[in-house]
Image (cartoon, rainbow, N blue to C red):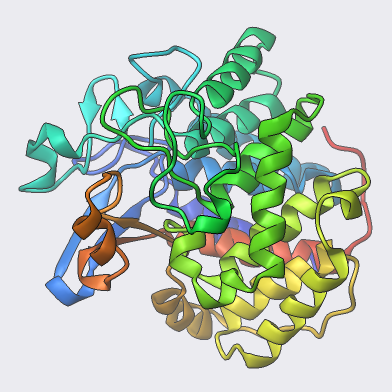
Length: 371
C-alpha cells in the first residue's frame, strides 16, 4: 500500500510549479478553465485548488509515515507562501479565489480579465479553506478566526440582504452566503460551500448559532427532499453534481460530534450506495467510496489505473463557475444552469489527491502521530 501512496504523492509533487512562469507562480498547482461548447480553454492561476490539495493531504497526515508527512508539509509550505497574494484588499482576514495583490481575475484571458465587472468578491469558500490550511500548520491567529466568524454572520441571509435565487423552501433560512459581497453581490446559498464553512466552525470549536443551525437545516432538507438529485444546480451551483455534494456532506458528517442531531446518517448512506450502484466513472466511485468510509459503512474496492483516471478526469467537473450567477436579474438567473454559460475548472493534481485520500482511508491503520 505504501508504494501506491508514494507513487501518487510523487505524481502530485511533480505537478506543483517549481519555477514561476508566464501562467503560474512557483508553488501553485496548474488549473485549466474551459468551456467545451465554446472551444474556450485557458490556464488559470487560482488559489482554490492548491489550497484544497494542501488541506486534503494535511488531513491525511495521521495515517502516513514520517517521510510521507514531511513531503506533504514541504508541498504545503510552498502553497501557503502564496496566500498573501490572495488576501482581500477590503478585509485582511478574508481571501479571494483570484489574486488580489495585485488584482488578476480570470488570468491569461482576452476578455473577462479586462472587465472590472468580472472581478470576484471575496468568498466564504476560499476564506475557510485557506484558513483551515493555515490552522493545520499552526499559522492561523485567533484574531483572524474571530474576524472570519463575524464576517460570515454579517453577510448571511437576512442580515444585510435577503436571498432571491433560492428555492422557496430554503428562502427563510438564515444560512451563510457564498459571498462577502458588500455591493453588487447578492446573497446566494451553495450546499458545498456551507459544508466547508461548517467545517471551519467545528474545527474552531465555536458554539453553534442560528446561522450554523440553519445551514445544517439547508443541507438536511436538501437530502430529505431529494433536491440534491433532482435540482442539483439550485442546491449547489458551483458544485452541481450529486456525487460531489455527498462527498462534502460525508466529510462534514465525519467532523461532527453527535452528527445524527444535525444530519440523517442512514439516509446519507443509502443515497451514497444508490449513487455508487448507478455510477460508471471510476473517479466518481472513488469519491463515493471515500464518503462511505467516512460514514463508517462497508464499501467495495474501486480498481483504477492512470489511464482510466485520465479519462474520468475529463468528465468529473468537480467545480464550475456559472457566469450568469452573482446577479439578481431574473432572466440571467434563469439561464445560468445552461452549460453554454458555465466555465469549468479542472486540476489534475487535485483529482490525484482525491485518489490518494481514498487509498489512505481504505488502508485505515494509523501509522504514527501527526508531526
